[in-house]
Amino acid sequence: MTAMLNVRDLRAYYGQVQALHGLSFALNEGSLTTLLGANGAGKTTTLRAICNMVRSTGAIEFEGKPLSGKSTENVVRLGIAHVPQGRGTFTTMTVEENLQLGAITRTDKKNIVADIERMYEHFPVLKERHTQQAGTLSGGEQQMLAVARALMLRPRLMLLDEPSFGLAPLIVRDLFKILGKINREDKVTILVVEQNAQLALELADQAYVIETGKIVMSGNAKEIASNEDVRKSYLGY
Amino acid sequence: MELFTNQVLAGIATGAIYACMALAVVMIYQAIDHLNFAQGEMAMFSTFISWQLMQWGVPYWWSFLLTLAISFAGGILIERLLFKPLAKAPVLTNVAGFIALFAIVNSVAGLTWDFTIKQYPTPFGSSPFLGSQLISTHQVGMIGVTLLMLIGLYLFFQFTRIGLAMRAAAALPESARLVGVNTSWMIALGWGMASAIGAVAGILIAPVVFLEPNMMGGVLVYGFAAAVLGGLSSPLGAVMGGFLVGVFENLAGTYIPGVGNELKLPIALALIITVLVFKPAGLFGRAIVKRV
Image (cartoon, rainbow over all chains, first blue to last red; front, side, top):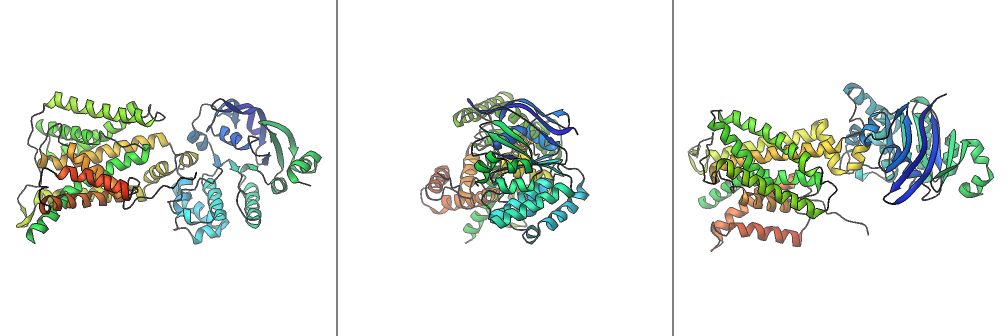
C-alpha cells in the first residue's frame, strides 16, 4: 500500500528556535493514526508544518504531490482539513455559518446543503443550536462544531490537534466514537494529535511517539499500547 | 421647531456621507488593523475621475458607475502595491505609508486638475423636496443613495459566500485560511470595496462642498469621529455613528453659542477624544479583553 501522506526529514523553526529535528512518518490511506508525545514534543508543530503554517524544511508529499511552497489555503484545497488547537471557532458567527465556511472552497452547492444536514445527524446538538452564535456553545459543542466544520470540506485527510483538550471524559468518548465512525464510513484518513494517550491508542490503528522533535517509536497502536516505556511515560501505569 | 427639524434633516443628509466614510475606514481597519488616513483623498480622487468623465461627455449615472468600478480596481491596486508588502511591518511604517499615500494622491490631483474649486453637478436638483423647505432634493438623494448602498452591502455580507469568506478573514485570519479562504485576496477585496464606498461619499458630497483636492479633509475627520463613536469593530456602528455625528454637528453649530460653522470641526475632534476616554470600544463595538 502506498502512503497517502509521506513526511521525510521534517525540520521546523520558530524564529531561531528549531522545534522539529528531522521527523519522518507516513500515513496509509484510510488509516486512523495518532501522534503521541509530551508537552512541547512538537506534535502541534508537525500538524502546522503539514499546512505550511510554520517555517519548515524537508519533504511532505500528499498523494504524491509535494506540499512545500503551497500556501495554507491551497494545502486545504487539496482536501486536507485541519482542526486546530483551540478549535478556531468563528465565535461571532452562527453555527450554520461556521459549517458553511467549512465548505467555502467547494463548488457543488447542492451537496453542501445535504452535507450540513448530515452533520446535524452526526451532531444533533448542533442542529438545535444552528442559529446561535458559535461563541455561546460549550467547549464540547464547539469541538463538535470544529470537527463538523472540517468535515464540510469533504476532506481526504483530517488533522486534529488535541480534540480532547478541556473536555469532560464522557464527551471525549463520544467525540472519539464519532471520529472512528467518520474514519470507517466516510473513508477519511485521520491523524490525531493527543495527550490523552490511552483513549487515542484505543481508537487508532497506527501510532507514532514523538519526543523533542523526533519520532522515537512507531507501529501498530496495540503494540505501542503494550510497550512498557509507553505505558510508564504516557499511560501512567 | 422648524429650525430644529431642518437642522436634524440636514444633519442626517451629511451624516449619510460621514457614514460612508466611516464604513470605508472600518472595512480597512477590520482587514488590516490600521486606520486609512488617505481614505478621504482616495474619495476625492475618485470624485475627480467622475468629474473628468462627465467633462468628456459621459452621462452622470454612467460616470457614477464607471467611477465605482475604477475606484474598486484602484483600491485593490493600492493594497497590492503598497500595503501588502507592509503587512508584517510595524504600525509606524504603515502610518508612514498612509501619509505618503495621502500626500501623493492629493498632489497628483492638484497637478492634474489644479486647486481651484469646481462646480459639481447633482442629478437630484437642489429644489425644496416635495415643496417643503425642510430638506432639498439633493439631500434626499444623498440619504437615498447611501441607504441603498448600505442595504446592498448588508445583503452581500449576510447572504453571499464571498461576503461570508470576507467576514471570516477579518474575524480570524488563521482559521479562515484553514477552511481554504485566500485571506490575502479578501483584504484586497476589502480595499476595493472601501475605495468604491468612499467614491460614493465623494460624489454625493461634492455638490455641497465643491470639488477641489482638499474637499475631503473635514469630511474624513467626521468620518473618523463616526467610526470611533460607533466602534471601529462594528460596520453597523460606523454607519449609526455617521448619522449621529451629522446630526450632532448641525445641532451644536446651531444651538451652542459661539460654535457656528467655524468651530464645528473641533467638535468632531472633541467627540473623538471623549469617546476614546470614556468608551473606547464605541457605542456598538466589542470591547477587546486581552488575557495577560
